[in-house]
Length: 173
Image (cartoon, rainbow, N blue to C red):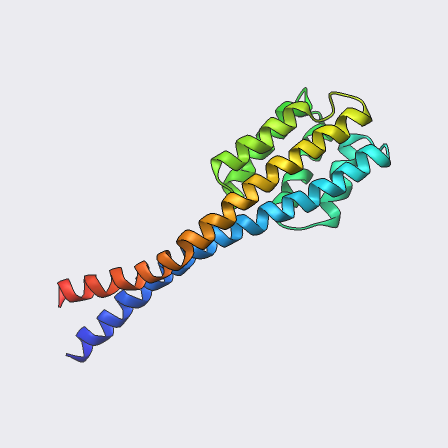
């Protein structure tokens, strides 16, 4: 009887923890999108106001920040510096695919980041400012979507994890 109770507690705890982890991943996506905006604002400052070459600007910003977005920029800078890729677009897209694996961002977020990489560095400073501003507007929509997802689903995943654990325990008992 004691063993059955301990097993039930373990099943309920494990499924509850899985629900909490999934809920936290939703919150982490929102935080990473906010961090992406902050980092891209730093990059915009380096590129448009400092007139810093893109590989140097990417490296500089990556050293001032941390997390998956920082590693993303460092990776792009490294590819450009080593000339592993012929274009910024190729280096950006390759690094974005790695970002998908390392972060809580979803495929739609990565596609959005890739689309910005297609136009980055292809025009003069004034055009780059406009592209950055458009990027921020679109990023705000992504952030709002992520926050709505957190509000709508986070509590549900936490509760569902524990309820599923209790259901499994009841079925097995």
